[in-house]
Length: 609
Ligand code: F6R
Image 1 (cartoon, helix red, strand yellow):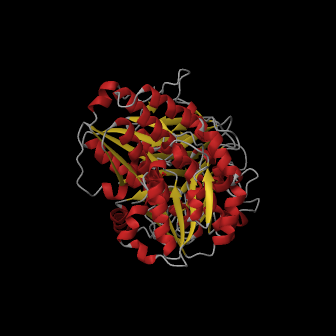
Image 2 (tube, rainbow, N blue to C red):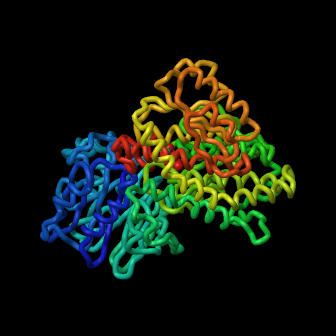
Image 3 (cartoon, helix red, strand yellow):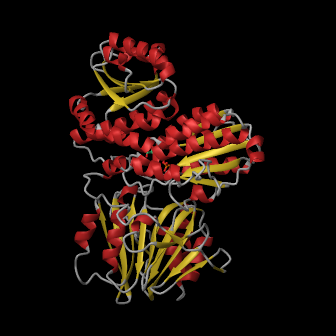
């Protein structure tokens, strides 16, 4: 969704801001803009479409200053036009703001400003009211004006503001929308997310809800909602400098697929003690807490939900606790049975998905213990949970999630094993066997990736298909959903996932010689049943790409093509099975000439309902 970058220092702010905005492109946007205080005035430039359109407009050396704020906008209120793009100005053009989030009472404020003060609005956005409010309250002190403006607003926001009369300063504030401050030497940054500033700084402050920040080139001062100064610990980002770069890859998605062996290993090993016991030391679930839990809800959206589908089966198997799984947008509006014996697990890469966050808050209010599995450090979901299990996937830039998913799976296994061993529902032998299987995963994922040329060839052969079905049983059915989502979101091919045993209850009517079926058969105990399901669709003329473990060659008789993954325990097969599906989706989209890293209509972080 929208991205904010502000710079205050001695250098050309516009260059730093453009660089930061480009690094936030993955969040999705349809227009961009920048505001600089120049010679006692605020100057603004905006452009619809790609950031390069904005760059062309700000090339003039006259448009330059050592301070500025920039924004990429994802249209919510009002079309993606230049007028609706941020930054927005007050009428006198003395104050400029950029905003991420939604001002819920903007209509009310708009009417009030129009009737009381005769203010004429230029845009259709909710955000413009912020600029007018700050302008109205401005009396030479931007911090004071921002605080007064915020007191009038309801909703979610991260805001950065500059004033013509204080050209050496940025004031920012957040509530329910992400914001970080990057700490430089003689310069400072404000931004929506760490990748925006990673090229320039390693030390950041994670800004908390209802905090206001004043940035000058030498100082960052954080205030709580009562105006008291806050002493915030510096968070040192330990990602590699090129973590958010594309390196030699054509697309972030391919880079991130290839990063999976490393990030799986990191997520796993960071949680293991030398004696192979699982270390969840920053997670405060005691044996007593775990024994007290009689029900688990896993709630998430999209790919994270698909990780939860696997998580449900794994945790139920290992910890013998019933697990319900739901998409957050449904969970919020149904009657659920939550009390203080409920563990609520939220899974989210961004940690900002609004539906997941709202479901979490609801569950928390009703007494549930909240454990979140999150990738973005300091994000809202992480901050509002009792315990956080961070996936160490590093920045995921491609809109289509890959490495976040596989690291989420690792967390599911570790949670299952930890709870199971604490409760005594799994024995030492099984525990050791599973740990061995988990530790072997990075090398095995590497082997799957080495098979990329074969999968690419399949993608070239089948990319023209209009209808693709993904089928599987047990854990494979969960992975089918993810394979199907990957394909549809980046290649725009209609695809559908279904538990294979359910096919004959209706969906098989769609099978004919134009249909491509990707059949996952990695689960040993369901293998024969799965082969029977494949025979059923083959009999209707469908083309079949089978996916099985090495040595399970029976499937060749019923499939047109077979992709093999290394031998492994059934439980961990999802981690290996999903990788060929990611690669297949990638190359199908490439064949079709799609915008792989930024598919149409999608944003990386969905902060609206
Ligand atoms: C698909 C994808 C989305 C996200 C979903 C939840 O590739 O990335 O389906 O998984 O929007 O996002 P997070 O995990 O950030 O809560």
